[in-house]
Amino acid sequence: MNQSFNFYDMWKDYYSQTSKLFDEKISKDFPSEGMGQILEMNLQFKKMIDESTLKYLEFMNVPSRNDIANISSLIVNVDAKVDDLEEKLEEKLDSQDVQESFKTELTHLKKDMKILDTKLNQILTMLKSQEKVK
View (cartoon, rainbow, N blue to C red):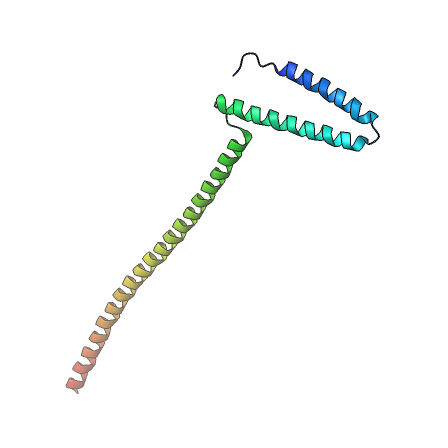
C-alpha cells in the first residue's frame, strides 16, 4: 500500500469538511435538505472505507466477513450432505440386516421342513408296513 496514506489526516479533513457543511446547511432555511446531503456524504465515506478495507484484506491475504460467511455456508451444506449419506447408509445396512435375517430364517425353515418331511416319510412307511402285516 501507499506509505503516505494517513488515515488520521483523512479523518480530520473529513471531519472539518463535514463540520463546515453542517454549519452551512443548518443556517439555511431548509435544514432537512442539508441533513440529507450530510447523510449522503457519510454513506459515501462509509462505502469508501468498506471498499478500501476489503482491498486491504485482500492484499494482505486475510479473509473478510463475506469470505468466512461463504465458507461457513459451504460447511453447512457439506454437513447436510454427509448427514443424508449417513442416513441412506444406515437404511441400506438395516435393509441388508433384514435380508440377512430373512435368509437365515428361510434356511432354518428349510431344515425344519426337511426334518418334518423325513418324519412324515417314516410315519408313512410305518403305516404301509402295518397295512401289509394285516
